[in-house]
Image (tube, rainbow, N blue to C red; front, side):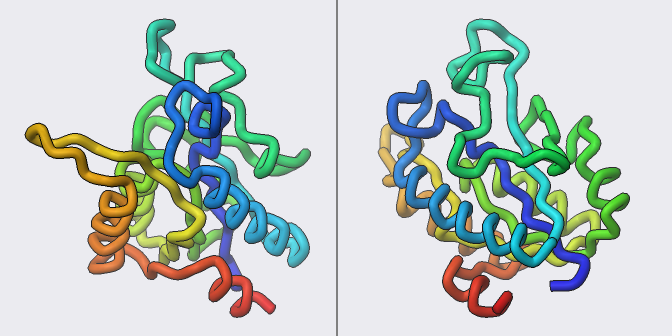
Length: 184
């Protein structure tokens, strides 16, 4: 796990129950993310949080300065842990994420968060393009049903399709239990 950081993307209140954009299984994903977060902290390994805010006041969720845009308490940053603010799906786009990871001398990332089909996908692909070795803890990620051409695609299928695509060329896909076992 040398030169490895945990990257938590968009585990924000609006994605949880009673939020503006609730995802399927967000709490279970965050619980797994919290397990990895605790182990990274226990081992003294770097942790970087990313949170999204939209600039428009009429945004469907993650309105700047709102309670919904705050990181969920189950995976909240502790003092000294970097929090990167982004305004696009890709966590690297117009942010200091790459500079933060470079300063920490990171070569490997373990990625968790939401949404599987959007910000996880965009962030993982960008990280791989920057040369990071990426592992996605797939059971620490969540999404929601999607619609295409009048067809509703269930969240589980959306998640599976994106994990399969990322696993093909961009990342290792693993379960939290497997990653925790490797860390111990």
